[in-house]
Image (cartoon, rainbow, N blue to C red; front, side, top):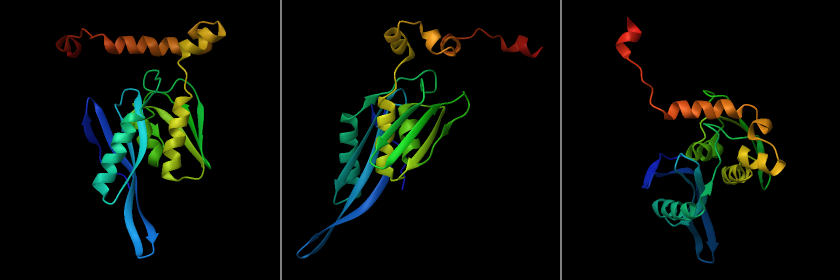
Length: 192
């Protein structure tokens, strides 16, 4: 079950990726409670995942949000996508992430999609292998995102220029610069 996004302030949004009704058995019977997988992110390169557990759903979501904000990681982005292919693992789940061309969108499902969207990745291809449990998929995606390295950093380690490591990087940086600078277009002269 996926919930709607909620604004936590400071540009951080949260979304419930999964809720489960669980119960603990005691001598006197079963005690029901809720476990909620919550993803938080700022849509600009920071994302966090956590599980909140409580007797009620609202309390579980609040606990999950608090823990996820504390667990936020930085995600290096190149334009609207990730810098290179990466694989993340958690338990029996493996998540493969590949950069995609502009306009592709987020080709992923379930918890993987929620994590990538809240991280600010707009164009990416994802494949989940093995178990597709929502909790393991979310944590495997976080593991994959933690392995990403900015092309400039990878180039400096290898003693090369960033363009030698990733030839397409110059074009992406040029497009980013064009998008940031305001365009001087006279709309009337374009239509005549």
